[in-house]
Image (cartoon, rainbow, N blue to C red; front, side, top):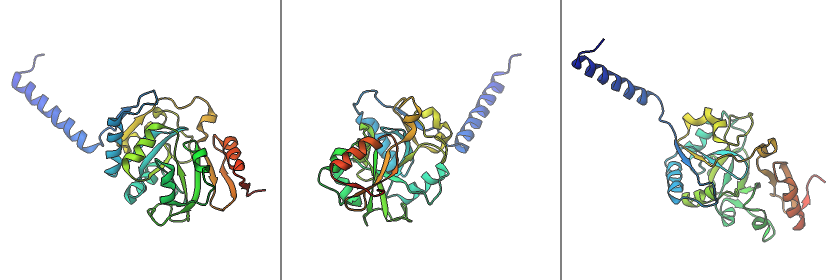
Length: 249
């Protein structure tokens, strides 16, 4: 059955109105950035991700271990969004990611031997130190400590530098579920993210899901492994080369 031209136009118009209303009622799909498979970084992609963070949004990024969700540390609303997206216990702290070892001296109180941070970072290690007063008090308000990372991934390093401040970074998953090695594994988070930086498959074993090794270096001359992660052996070797002692022994 053929429809009259005027009726056909009316139906098309109504369908467009329905589509428009649907877009208004549902959040827009996140922007997908397919990152280069090489170590090269596309400045245009870094700009897109940085602008999203600077606008208070939450994005997904690859690291040298697993995928993470990220927001600006100094933006209290962004921190709140991260906890809500992950359904994360407010009492559980979130680590931060910076672009240079020099940033540690701004956001924490460094009491470490000269050269130790340069030997550990960039790498799959989170260093826990006393926080500085410049850090947003709404980030981890229940602790005087802060975990700081420089993942060995060129994109997130350049992203932190472009933003000019620390990035709150935690695993891209619902809390208490397994960490993710590709963007499909955290598809349930997509509607709440503004940008997804797709760095491809990050690993293919359960060991790959362990994330970074977390070590407390807030006491002079001591170290305490909080989480074994994926680089405990290598981390301890560096720490003991600098004559730090295991606080547990």
